[in-house]
Length: 295
Image (cartoon, rainbow, N blue to C red; front, side, top):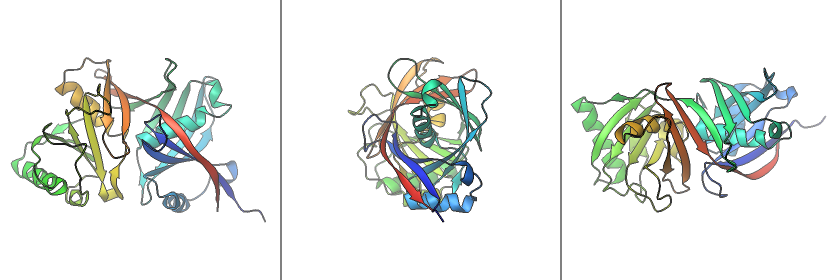
């Protein structure tokens, strides 16, 4: 009896340089394994031990110009409802196939609805993801603000001034003073488990030498879902784009640059469509590894 085999691809997302950006494993499930149970998918993701593993199942397309796939994302601990960098990685893998080279548009059916990925038509090789923008709720309660400031100070070792806090679904966005070296700080993610959010975004308008044109930088921590620090978080920019778009008064539909300032680092181009409530996220992705997984 032959051993069931899965082909996998490791892709570094939101970078054009190997060994930077955010790595994700991408697996297109063959027909014989479309019914693999969630427990098995989680075991596979845990074996890779990356921040996310994406599983794809081809679906019938409604247009010759579009390919459709079912898409699920797993950390090493749980299934998550949305993941930007693993979606970008999935698009890079599909666009590299003979079928994908013939189209410019992909549709992914996910727990968060239908997501669209497109080739950016400027010759850069970048891919654009079209996501719903997150609704932001300002935190004004004094006790909540005090707790957030206390936790952020504990995580960053003190010396951090919080300028604003917003809730957005399972994200908590915390703007810190640009005088704090967010990019160079050693941050302990463990204190963030005290906050009732899957991911905490620290962000600042501080300049970065890695991308001088960036309007803001950010770092994202998710110890509650098994990710101490996420190298680059596409889905967090559904929160960051409307936040900084408003703060910096960036016109709707205009491209602006962002840098996620983790150790690996990553670059994103953002377009906030205010009227339609959408965020378009553009980025590069590079394949670093391919192989076989035996079940």
